[in-house]
Image (cartoon, rainbow, N blue to C red; front, side, top):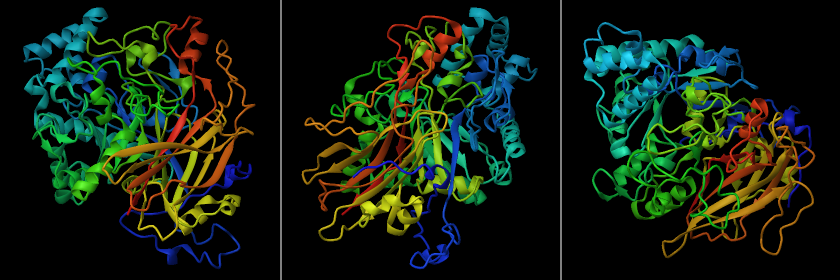
Length: 628
């Protein structure tokens, strides 16, 4: 059964609340059996869909500043909340739609140091290497670029002069970063969330984590950020997080960096530190401290890979798999340990053996921009770093930090953002939603998505203008759990999606299922569950393409195909109550112009022949798990 949702839903969509650790208190919501005349009265549920970026770098990050970025954390917060700023390259820039929250996650290693090196801080100039970097960076041109690359390599190899890791210096910079967040935090309107990126890079394997704080300056300032000078082992970061919480009474979580350049160790079967199979303790700690995963960003989309999901026609989306950072070439065996869907499937295996699923994470997206600008809009994309801000040559200019690896500029992805269903726009409410995994990733558009699972959803439930009311009454939302299937019943799912007013109509909504069979093998299947138009599933099991209205030359499109809203109830036709499984929704837009089309039009240049010029933006919800 599929249908489009009445237009009135665009202003009346509401959400609900479900906490992983706390059952919903039905008594505080109001009686669903005898509701008030007002459908909004007495509801104690997250009804705010908030948009933000959880991974952004400013001039406090050593590599960003070495590359020419001059915007500060204050500039980043101002831009994210809708103010016009001047980018490092001199262009004026403003967001098409302001964000509701931002986490500035400058690298904890040598945070703020490059600013001082460039200024010529006398306390740092006593070091010969720092003096050399100061001179070369300030010389400009290729000399500065060579120095910047050398600095990035030094960070990766942990050969940065020890002066930059002085605890007193680091703590002073951290206090400045916290002060910027405090200054721009405006509860109820805009949340400036405190955070940093722990930049683990063992043997050129990207294992970065973004550490997010629930609380404000009073707690965050008590302990300096963790750095890779202390350790490159994620398990040691988790120990630091426990120490921080014990010492301050605050709360923190960590979000692993998109794993497609982790050289196959982001989601390991064997602990790369001990070279032994994962233990229950590892699984418990990872599940505890890392409730979310960054599934899409500038350096590629990480939801699925065509070699892992050959039957998924949408799996090959903005795929970065041609190389890794450092000396090791990309090999096919690495892929299963780098991509979201495969990690979710492998997590079921580990749970069957260990009793705990280490990869039971929700999904979210971020930019990882090193510009101070949280831009994921195709027509307003400012790139990875200052050298890849808009210019007539950026589609062909190498954006890699690690020669001889070459990533031409058109590889960059205008992605992504995180959608959070929260009770209010505050640091605490956003953090709590992240912990219960009531979040989802998009590749940029603000697509509104609700995804509920239960045992009793029926087709008539799609007639509501408030999907959350029935969703929470009958089931759990994204990030939730279903257990012990009632005899003779299969899980049913309520899927509702609404387009971004400034982006394309919707093509379809899908449910992706992964499961573990009795022999311990994992499987997956993609179900088209609701779509625009009068198309039908063909004999090959595929839905015909929605069409394409993109005018590449003029970088525009017509919303004459697709639908502004989609809603359905879908029940798993292949359900086996004895098998562990997960389900998540993927919502796909109609084709629209990619940022490369806007670039070619603005500068009147030819894009490289191999560069895609259209895109089908999408959203990925956090899963709902079924456990027998």
